[in-house]
Image (spheres, rainbow over the protein chains, first blue to last red):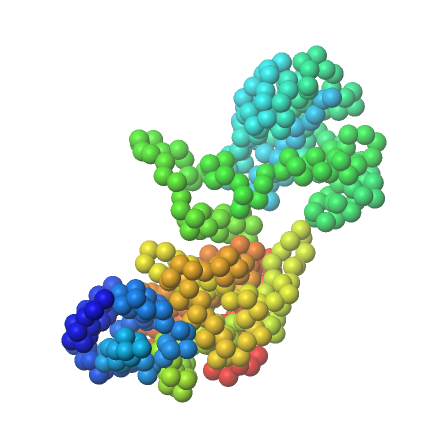
Length: 88
Length: 369
């Protein structure tokens, strides 16, 4: 999928808000540079769901060792990771 | 040759069953699988089926009679005019004979946890063939028995019209768990209040230290459970044929909810892993579950289990024991600073004290007894 960076960040934000809702959280105030796990809005299973959506949407197969805070801790980091993958 | 059809055992605790009625008549031609009689206990009903093709030579008991498990319910012959073996022909469902077992039969009895008195002998001695025939007549275990043949008294036939819907593999797995829990285990439940804030703080430090994307909180609790299973093998065991069966390694079961599906992922040999290795491996398994790429050994065969409903803000819950396990720990959500962990345990294997000790180990930050 070829998306601009703002489109990617908007899509990630929308997915996080969607995943947080059934857990009783309103994540609409999430900022792009805010650490997602630290908000407590997504639990481990929901973060896994987020990663599965991310891989499927952007056609990636993320190695287990890449699944860390540096690469996926914020919306900005997730968009950066995608850019690095697409640049390869 | 005439073959006896024995009264099967429906429930472990019932040595007799009530004959509701015969479903065939003497002289009738039957095929393997045809219904021969309806029997019941206070908990369940069961249709006894013919085990081979042939003719009904005799039917024992009358509707309402209590029949001993293992006694002869009917005789089936290859020809309608066959005679029933003289020494047992007069026997009815309320009577049975006890004979001294042969050495081979005695070994089979010991292995199966059975008593010779519960099995009718075809001759002077109770033979291995007698034991084999008796075991073959027993209802299959809950995991392989069709649910339709185990209708319990609290599951009456619906009076309203409807349609049967096949169960998914996950639903069949849950049915197996429920039936094992109901029919085999003697479940007890205990819970323990603990300092959730201290453990959350520890998990947050662990997450930052290792730059983990996911919170390791539940995994850190589960690792402590695996360690407790290593220290106390009773936690990692079950009952088989009247003996405690201690598993060789801790295969830690951990529930993962993905959409509408509840998985029990299984981390094999979990007690041999370091805390960090355990957390990493469990994350991998969770990821595989959500991707639906679990292998067979990663989704079955747990020997000790952990489940949490904290994500749903559930304050307390009592989980079912996975088949042939003695303990499952239930993690819940703290409410106004107060948190509980619970454990469902098989009282045949563990005492409440054993379960409490396991819960103490699960909630302690230091990995000690």
